[in-house]
Length: 242
Image (cartoon, rainbow, N blue to C red; front, side, top):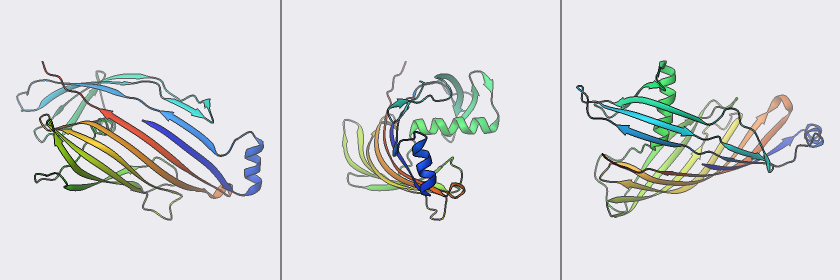
């Protein structure tokens, strides 16, 4: 995932001038690059008809710059080994992280991360034909003080072709914080492509381009911040069998 973020302050001129005098260049331009890779190996059904799995997750050190200068990010590159199972309802259950038993809250956090990696899509219950569309709403909690509502991402998928065992979709995104009186408001649009492997029942390719704008108020400083964000996200999956 590559992100380009522009941030600009507004409001009380004395405070803004003080920020500029301290050396802060506006607008502030931030660039970020985040990569992640995972390898999931499934085992044979167990006695309960569940499918055990082992997931190796590698997260390199993210890269970030501010106005062209490298910006250190807390933490470091990590490698984790996650074990779990798919139950009889095809639901993912995490059991341990690098050999350690986890609390329920930790398991939930890991499950959400894995679900994000897998790019879950809720397809219609009835068969689709070329030209058909369906829409999926995905709420996303924003960990930002003063922003209490979810960012809702409405994604519309359109089946454009079926070739060589792959279903090819176009995607359109519409994002809105849905809370006009919130201290933080965000909205945006985007497009993308999505390739589904019919034989393996899995998404093998997804590319997304998203443009967002945001505003946030800082009443204690008598200031506000507004800006824009461009994101490019790419995800690929390959299969192999023993």
